[in-house]
Length: 525
Ligand code: NAP
Image 1 (cartoon, rainbow, N blue to C red):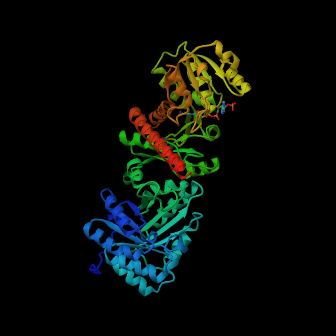
Image 2: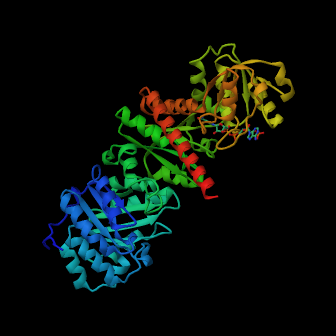
Image 3: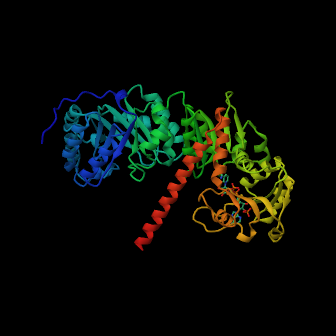
């Protein structure tokens, strides 16, 4: 095998791209093929050689790939099982793989601290003569003792020190970012938190001082919990553009893993050239959310279940809709540092209907008496609609009707009435459920508006459509409440059409994926 010269120019950290995409494969050929595909958009890749049963077989394809792509930066990693990787060989075998990968052109090699401490300094020196050394440490349980970890890492001379923790709270991201801010002037650091709650560190960690961050090639090929795809990091979160002036927004709730909001809001920010990023903030407690808001200068929040009421305690002032509905889904941090609350669910209900009919005097039936129903009741009443509330738990429906001064309806009386609009503000029809809150013969209205947005066509909407009734899907509400949030935060009109387009695409993709999965399961049986 022809081997490249051993002299390797030192890597200058600021020359490295901000996103390193992790390449895995079952065979060396598959790995090289994937890398070939990826380098069109990603000039920085990490080859996880430990994912191969025989990593040494990858050296030749690696050399061919790197000879053909001299502009690509490549990290070779062959992490052992004991340190969270997949390589079952000895330390000597790991070093051999890394050293050969360096010889054929990988400019960087990753070695775990635990291994490096067991290796003779001369061996490490030799390795460092061939490639820049990333000394890494992974904590798969927590984000703690970062400074102490760095101190113990300093016993080994390296070009980069990579410290990866696991976020079990949002605040763990703050811990990681403070560490990066304090220590990145001393070393070239790479720092992030794994886990779904670690997304903040993956995106804001760069501006805190991490030289680069990691991403997966495609969804489903994550090599660490919480890793997102390179495409998402670049296109959705625009990680290359995040700087100290970038304003930070997010959706706070539990759960939020399937929230469409990051996609919608980041799309809107990009489209309107707003220097802002929007993150999913999975807060398992309100206390954690508060601690995170205190330490990260978050400019605004979308608030979702279960914090729409609890957040009221933290607000300095609210809009009339928040006061009336007793729920806040939008927070803005004013220039004075105070927190202001808004309820944009009201706009989410009113706007799509106003596009269809005049609400003054319109007869509207609202199914449900929870938070979403309250937004509909108060918003539509303000526009002059005549409202009836029908709720499964009649007493709750009556209570809401009384406080809003509208009528409560009992199910047996439903057949006596016809409406201009029926709004479903219950959760019936969500997901794979085939349930509908009304029987087809009970749908007596010109329009049916279902707040449930996943699936796009709920059983209620399907039944209404079959009866010739015009339908408004819940995605309209979702887009309009988000559009209003965008307007409150930026003072600009929201690109609602673009937001709707990406939301629809994502929901269609998800339902195609779910159908394919169901099919696969059927075949297995
Ligand atoms: P919530 O406060 O928990 O209220 C749930 C409502 O649904 C209650 O009235 C409840 O009746 C009723 N309900 C639940 N299961 C039922 C069943 N099996 N049969 C009949 N009624 C049932 O929830 P929410 O925040 O108001 O949200 C309601 C729905 O609106 C959810 O599906 C949510 O995803 C959707 N939503 C959509 C948007 C959007 O942007 N499109 C925004 C907000 C909410 P009881 O009082 O009898 O329990």
